Image (cartoon, rainbow over all chains, first blue to last red; front, top):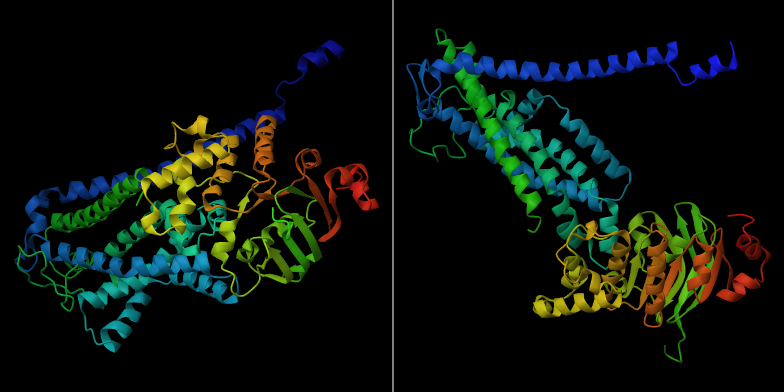
Length: 303
Length: 258
């Protein structure tokens, strides 16, 4: 080859480069198709549910009592029960979890005790919900004498969600740059004042996200509440928002869906799907509210 | 500058350990009131550690043990009755990377005042005055007086660093510690911050850690050369740079190591 030919070949594609380019395209294609593989089933599930539920869906479906041995009518007691359980469990778990996370992230020294606690929190977050259910049954229903009740079920759900709230809150807190804290400490500002004025305002949206994800979990779990508070049927007054007392048994959507689908014969198919849609709706509703709250807090940092 | 006590900072036999590692060894120093003192030395020689001792913020970084005494303005800061809050109000710190808080310029400057003053003293006019005075002192007032509501983290780096100095001033500090305050800044900004430091000297005692030998030479009145946690030489800056006593100092200044 003459020098000219060699020079004209400079910087052109070799077979090795062609292979790399092919691999590059292949990798990108695979990752993209996995993203599709995640979204498509979600859309399919939701549209299938709504399609199947359509005959039973109506505004009154949510606010009516079940009728005719739960084969007809609405889901009001279960809907209300789920709201109760979710809200009460969050009222218990969120403050405890957030404050514990603040202690662990902002105050605790890095020693074996802290590390043990952190490890315990992570492990607790992985405990199956049926185990939490048995714990709730033993601790709240039997030992504390609450019986099967709204409060026992809420406490069980709170225990279940607590470790995850702690873990996600810690994550949000540690995402606040250390330099903010340094700046504050070096002006003689105490730790608590720094947390109040700097750390929390800058992590609140992350903290809320973590809490909100637990809403879906608390609303969707059946196991922890079926031993501790939720029952098959509770007749309540249809127009009463405060229908359940803390010591009452209650219905819940997840439990109701399970009962209707497996325990009662000859239930119209659309009713089961309608309950599933309602459950999905509750979760989406709470998520939407929380996203709104996050956006609000992000734009109005002052608090 | 009081005649009977020309020293703002006096340390005696200061030892400091991070766990088992001894970072400062028998540091005894007299740092004069109202001048700029430069701390120079290769990385890891304990300059920043020493600086952080002076407002005891070291203790926030865990597993630190100190022995010896540090006298600031005639008071041993390791005395049991010393309040860390009051100490850190008087001894402010400026960092390597400008670290304004993610709030407005105005709120940054009054942050310390708001935290440390009783509610009755937080009148709007007092805060406004403090903001104007502090910004004037760091020569930012003309640039920023119309943008006080701007987010401080959106400013240019030079303005951010000056703001970090300005926000210490409403607390009426006596000593300002600077940990390589210009290493993240470009040439123009460095010059501006250095000029600012020279105007602040006299009113405040400034201790500055720097890796930049030329900077130490330009702005400090006295220099301390540290090596492996020990003080090698402490003298007037010209003396250190032109005629150092210790061979290690002259080797470092000539750039033979470090």
